Image (cartoon, rainbow, N blue to C red):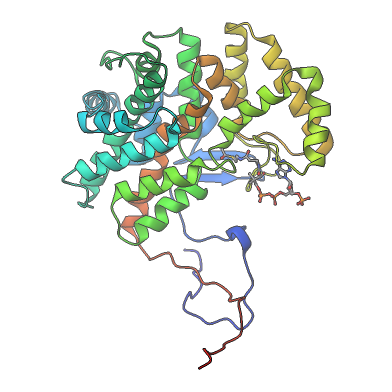
Length: 381
Ligand code: ACO
């Protein structure tokens, strides 16, 4: 086992780890990110292999149970998930109370909170109850995301279909029909790639909340809050705003020069862990290419390439997963503000796997800080 530092020690001159960069806080058996080899393993399996050969349902099962399901296990898992796909009435009522201008991440955060508040087992932290709650959220989040997009468009709710896989049903509930296989496949690949990524900010948030022995729903609500920011999950939404702002491929280089001169962060580029490229990008880019061809959008493909080429030439900072997934979701027909909730729909699997892992070997997460304020002083009088 790895050495664990003594958190109670009082250090004379503490070394500050701003942003916890480079700090290893715990072990995990769920996924392994190797920035040197640009690889990402879920429970030992390369994510590219899982995206090519497995469904999102199989990958979710793998992340939770540690092994890929047998045919019987998968059938049972799918039965349980499909039985819980409908939008709970209590959630629908609360969403209807929210303004149409509410950000879909805020709507989703509220909806998950309502599900938690309505669940009598919310504070049952046995492994069986935790897994049931995790599968319940995984099954219901698509209905929340789809319902919210449709209500903003003034469209009626579309009930789930239990004869469809996760991704086909998600698209059916959002758009009222099942798109062609190329679209369903691209969506499924995005769900697999977003599912898990070790101690990223939102997953770490869920582990911090779990470490206080709070319930799973509280941890997930916190994770949604952490994912919303544009330095994390919110970047897939921000990428699309960038494409809208740039407009055309031939304007990309000049736009970038101005943006960099203004010290702006270019959304969808860079990563805290990967410095030689994000391991998930080539797989998602292949799916995006298939969509660009399917929807006949060479203009968007040219814009994507032009901005990436310019960013590599100027800063040598490479795209992260949000760069290809943003335009992919756009082509599928999702509203730009709905992109980050799609990330939640997938990452709920990784978050809840980490919540269960944290609970199984818990230690309160409580780092130290170095005081930089006023010297001790006293109230006059
Ligand atoms: N645009 C412009 N400059 C950048 C970018 C970017 N996207 N990313 C890094 N840099 C620059 C920084 O300004 C810094 O330059 P400096 O040394 O001159 O100050 C240098 O590269 C190092 O960057 P850091 O900020 O130290 O890198 P850090 O690891 O803290 O940040 C982060 C990683 C937050 C992801 C950053 O790259 C960023 O803001 N990217 C844009 C947001 C984004 O796409 N987030 C999605 C993350 S992946 C995901 O959630 C799926």
